[in-house]
Length: 107
Image (tube, rainbow, N blue to C red; front, side):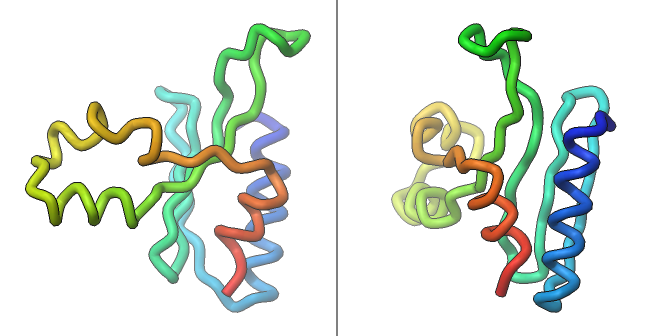
C-alpha cells in the first residue's frame, strides 16, 4: 500500500477509535483500491484514479456507496447485475478527503 493511503488509513483509524467506531479495511493491490466498511454499515473506498489535469496524471479518489440509490433500485425490481450500469452516476459518490474520513469514522 502506498504511503499516502497508509497515512489516510491511520487518520481514519485514529478518528474511529476516538469515536468508538469499528473499521474493516481491505486493501486490494490488484485493483489499487482500499475498501473501508464501518460498524454502522457505511461503505467507502480510497484509491488512485487517472486525472490528466494533475501533474503526475493521477490523484487520490475517495467515494462512498449510496445505499439509498441501491435500495431504490432493488425495490423497483432492478437485478443486482444491472444496477451499476443503470445508476453508476449515483451509486458511488465522490468525497474530498476530510469529508470521507469524517463519514467513515464518526458516529
